Length: 132
Image (cartoon, rainbow, N blue to C red; front, side, top):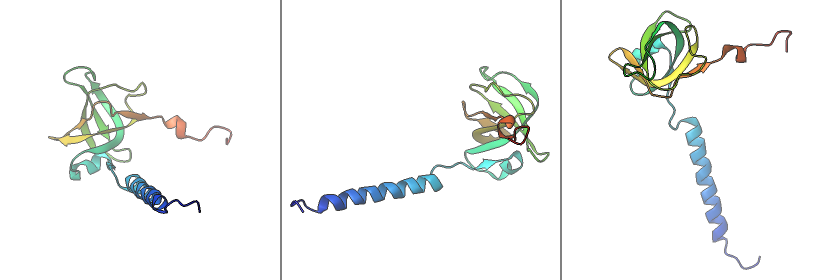
């Protein structure tokens, strides 16, 4: 060797190991919010991600003080929950669209976090015609 102390190597390896453990923890359990359907919302506590289908009627606007108001239904069921949302609305938002949003249940109404509304584009996940 050239006379350097192995302390630097041990220190560098220790820092690398600590970072690896931190990345593993955050990817598995750190900061995740559960994704629930309207039928599962009654048992939830705190902030969750809600997923479902938008059903009519859609009232108000996201910019108004009352917010955009609509009802979300389970994708494979009949359970429904009223939603209040304020913030930007995706172009694909509308009745019959599957959406996701973060928020909390308050007094029987799901109050979404502003800017958390996301729509899922079903055509993006369907097989193309002709088997390709």
